Image (tube, rainbow, N blue to C red; front, side):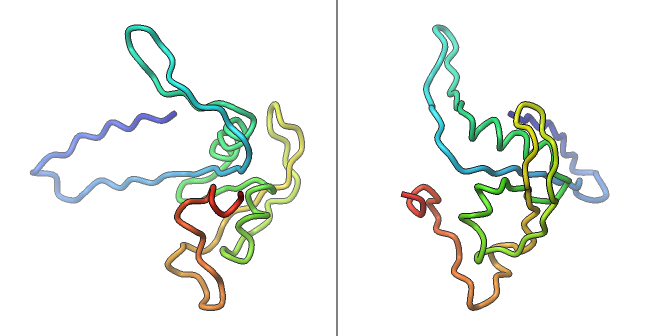
Length: 121
């Protein structure tokens, strides 16, 4: 989970720059509400852990995906293989950086559906 605090001032000469790095994996997960006084929504599972590893191994402004995620996304996005890399708790994995934004897809490619879960099941 990430928290971003940003203070905007009217007198600031230019808008602050914000970059993100993203990690994606496909797989099963369990979700639920936890807590007694203060409630929190929690999402856990191996796919969530792998996506977190992809995020931490990413670079600002990049989308880093696991081999499992790339299986579903290839043909919709260009990608650069990062080759085999070691990830704590996961071992050696092949991962990829996605190269195309959805609006920049070649015409022959099919855009990813809005609900990725529908595309898998």
